[in-house]
Length: 616
Ligand code: ADP
Ligand code: MG
Image (cartoon, rainbow, N blue to C red; front, side, top):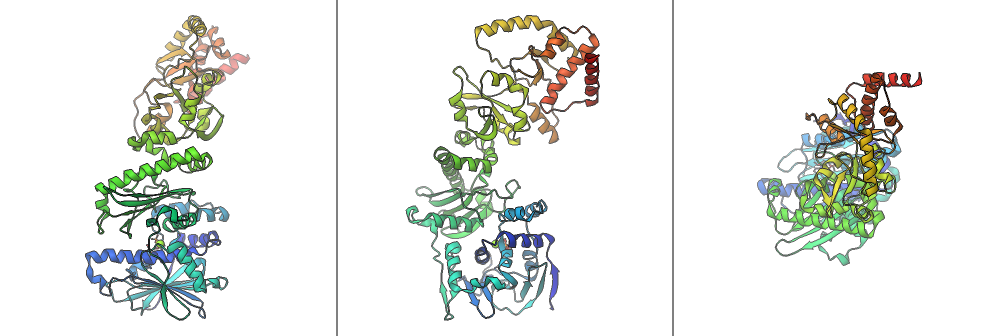
């Protein structure tokens, strides 16, 4: 077959360009990625060989070999793993797998500086070879096949595929280095990089020395099997970058050995960068599962609960069978035990950071708080621990930064206060300016300000914290005045406004359940309040957007007797005008909540009428 030329998928070209920009200070990771692919290829063949021993006619001693040719300016990485067929090679090395990645790329801004930073979060993979190489050739022979294939490219948009006379099972990758990357031709440099990122790989990595002999350079004893006090921080950090294919530093880690009924080691890291696919249905990376030090698979759903999907790391089990499958993981008692033990460890780690290093915790919360909140809904068993980890914006410091914990709140509660007040709206800003919280603010009650989509679910699943019920200030009757004097003046007011309330009520009977005087309001004339137990306006509109029909539940309209508009209404003699006032008072309450009017044109007309009447 003569060579055929193919264009890279457009996204690949884009990714290549960005990668070269973003990795200039991190170039050496190309070797980590190639060695990792070589090791994956060996793992895959070992796995397939269990089912199909014919694939292993060349033996099952796996190895990865590195060599340099200073004259030719090339580095070669060879493995005797699974290899790639003609069709596979074009698919694997010409496209970007994973629709999430493609969508993400489509969202890039075009600002190279910014995008370059983002791109660092990708599992950079094979294409990182082009960060140092001006030309890459891949020869590969798929295990069990007899025709090898050659793939080659200069990374600028096209690649060629042709037959190859490569005769050994597996893959050989030859990089022709760019002129200014010749430093990587030093075997000692390669050895250093392998030690740093790939030491733990359980397959011998051999480097050809100046005399032409191959020497094993990796330890291949797993770092995580050593006692904690023998492991340096830098080693943990390097291992994190290596197993998570990351370029950021971990924020924290927890390394743990369990013995007894179950026997496993776990090592989990909290990243300092938000993975680009955090909200995709499935993530590119997860937790690596080893069984007796042999890498088995990367798991994204069984070893940790979904709300911890930002955690990276590994589990090394001594109990699971070596030929474990993904299906088996789904209903396995050992896996269940690992998951629940791991979850406790990670929540424990977060709890101690929150206690001892609040600034660090804040950083964590800003990155992953919104995901952690899902745990309140998903994981009843750990709800108490999770509740302690939550952070909210609060009227206490009048900031929308999420820095207030529930125990901070409880510590500041007024002496007779029993409930934890919160206001939820479709943004924290809307919550903070909502009429509903005016009265509480004035009386010195703290209100938590919620505005995330997940918050509605959070508050329906978290009913209390340390025996203090969570209470929506937009629901039901808020009886804020507990002093006797207030009670009396309340009665007087009720008298004074009884007629007004009844008149408004009869005009708005179709739209509101009840009209009453408010103790919540200070500056606004009115607000709408959901009945106790009814969904809030925010939840309602969320469910409606999701296509769920909601039964019509009429809200309660609360009016502020000390607002000039209400005072004025109380003495309005003109019936038409009063009717307009009543509607406007209700409609503006809806608008203030971020709600939508059924007939906005009628609202505008009424408003104009009132303005004209007042100014004439
Ligand atoms: P990832 O390793 O995350 O899948 P890469 O970009 O590193 O992404 O590699 C893309 C794909 O190319 C791999 O999934 C694998 O199928 C194939 N591949 C790369 N290197 C090798 C190799 N040495 N042997 C066999 N297949 C390989
Ligand atoms: Mg890879």
